[in-house]
Amino acid sequence: MSLAGNGVMAVLAMITVAILYRALPVADIGQWVVYQTVYVLLDTFRTGFLQVALIKFYTGTENNRAKEVLGSVWFLAILITLVLAGINLAFAPFVGYFSNSSLLFTIQWFGITFIASLPSSIASWILQADQRFDRLLILRIISQGSFIVGVILLILVDQMHLQTLFIVNLVTNILASAVCLFTGWTAIKTFFYRSKSTVLEIYHFGKYSVGTTISANMLRSVDTFIISYLLGASAVAIYNLPGRLMEIIEIPLRSTLATAMSSLAKAFNRDKKIEVGYILKKYAGTLTLIFIPIALGVFVFADLAISLLGGGKYTATEAANVYRIMMVFAVFYPIDRFIAVTLDIVHQPKANFIKVTLMLLVNIIGDFVGIYVFDNLYGVAIATVLPLCVGIFYGYYILNKFIPFKLIDIFKSGYIQLRSTIRQFNSKRIFS
Image (cartoon, rainbow, N blue to C red; front, side, top):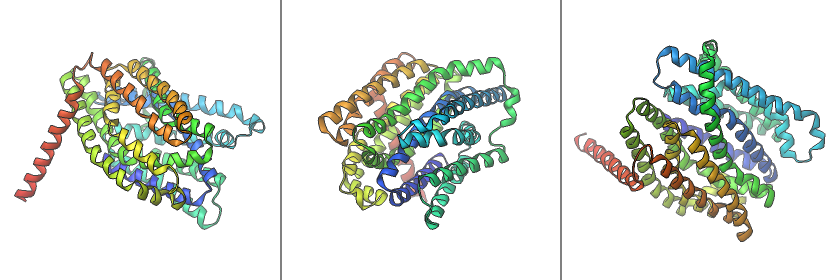
């Protein structure tokens, strides 16, 4: 169900991108991407502070403790939302002094959209922690599906432009949150069970996890800002296209992380460190080996994928080759991501924050050097290998102090798991 949820979300997102890239000029797409990047980055402060903490302190606990955690999460989420929306509102009187249209859209639409998305965000964290991926799938279909319907209606009535697109985005968030409140998925009644001690506990954990999440998001979004500054909005649109196609990797990776995180937390909370290491190696190794043939397939069909998603006007750009470069390095994403998640689970959020911060610094330097050397998007794509190497080796060095293992064991465990799965599948076919 987790895989299905992420898969449906990715397919709907791909459809959305395909429609928008055909319905809007390249420059407008670039502005929309910049806004989305800023929004996700600011939303990451709320998500990063609370999502991992909710899963860690809530999963597998008894009923009263669970209510305390959820109520405290609600309290902190409301506080963070009001603070960021208030900061956004403070900029509103000065919009006449800004000439950057992407910044103007952000000031105009961020605050109200951020407030509207609060209930659905908390509901998604709770559903993930409870492993109710069936309900999470429904929520995602409502959210992304209604957005696609809204965009199509705008095109049909010939009202497709950036302002109306932002209106549809807001209405979509209001609808998703209303559904979550009506169904009770938000557990908003637990707000009254919050406690000062639990709020402080989540805060002290979250102050590092939020730094990690923001840095990780900056790691993905800093490319957009640097490309926009040095190469322009059109280059942002081109670079965003293969980024969207990376969902072929992100879907199984997010799905596996969503299910493995709860298993890792339960094992660690029961002081089963050997089991924590086993789960890490099994999942990371299996995904790494699965991603190798996927990367080979992308090498062959990259041009076709770019043409199908973005349209013919992007086939003569760097998009296809950038996609190929990204996929080569993406094979090792599972190792980096699972090491990062496990650092949080073993209560080392500070080490994880340092890890991602080092990756961010290396990525920024690499982007500027890459654009200086190549003077195009290839430099940015190639530079992504540097932070990946830093993240894997630094994270392994720290995690190995708490959960001893060897990097080669990840590949061995993945091979054993794949072989076992294939044998089980073949035996079922024989006896069926």
